[in-house]
Image (cartoon, rainbow, N blue to C red; front, side, top):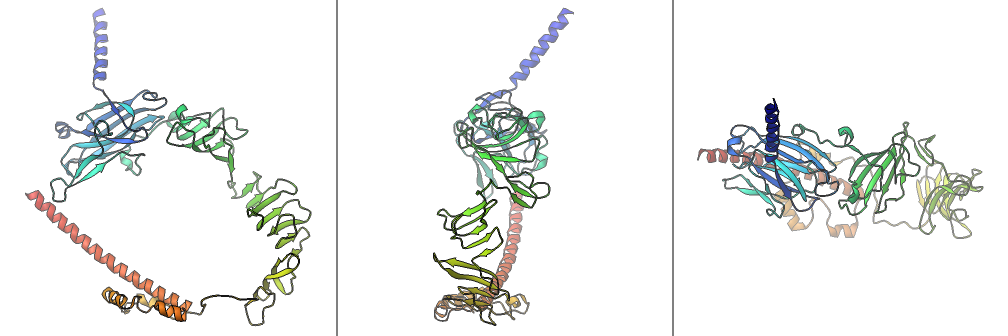
Length: 497
């Protein structure tokens, strides 16, 4: 019986040593913020019978650097080799704290190689187990960048696709390539625990989603459980980050940019409530937008220039003024104001719906007057009968003509419309230096332009241009189809050689 136990122990030890021996350790050098191409070449004898498989592991989260991250990944695949194989890629990836695989690619679709590329994070050690040949690393240290993939191998059009490092994970990969999810965080929720929002990158802080149970460097008064969204600078040696946070238990949201200061103040983000209402100074707005002021003689709302020469403000407890436009707050130099008694300063209401006057220091100056009839006076309160606009002073314009257009140039799209050939347009431009039916620079200088007529001409030219583009697109599509037919015929001829 004793010999049986000894045999089992030896067998288990042998299995363990065998498992260990199947893994090799590689180091991808370069920059830890970049992902470098590592080429795995399938073995022909494996490719002919079954898919290949790569395992890429690192079990210690602190290997290479503190909180660098851990990884368990398995990628099953079969390369195309000029479209001959039933090619597929089936990744299963689990990681924590750091991201290590930025993408993958079958590099054989236009050649007869067995190459499969995986982009691995630089400055990182990996344990590799694979049915392929030993990986070849292109990190600028083991081998120079880029890795060159042959495109249309053996054809007259043969070229190369250069694969360099990546700086972020690929997006838009087909969902059926993600048979395994990218899992990390509490219970694989992708949410991790971090109490200190002011943590530096070299102390373990990374971009991500977090929950805090004892919030530190969160908004003032933060207790219990809080959310944190942290978007960090790529250099872990600084503390530059953009952060959002909020309690689990209400709808308030906070924002800050740390600016290398872990105690940087937070600012509350204005958000709408369940009824679509916004509030400033209140969490229970009673209207679509409500502002609660800071107290007597403090503006509830102010838009002001740097020198108080133009402003808009409202007061919630001012004895004289509740609404101002222009001038200095609290003074009588305003251009427009509604007093607490409801009177409109700067307006005489002499047959007008609305009037605004300026001041020269002592006297009111005519500004804008809107009459009950809908007429408008600028620089005058008098608008003669029969006119809609009166200007008390000079008005300057090169020329203004407004009229109804009864012949709007949609006729260009009529099938009977005779569209000039482009060769004729080109000849006209060379001879006259302007488009047909459009006035020359000399005519415009001497006579000005009729705005309505000019807009009509411009629209006509735009519609003609549209027809030229449609015709050009049809010609391009025809040429593309001819090229595709020629390429197919060339491919068939090459295969028959």
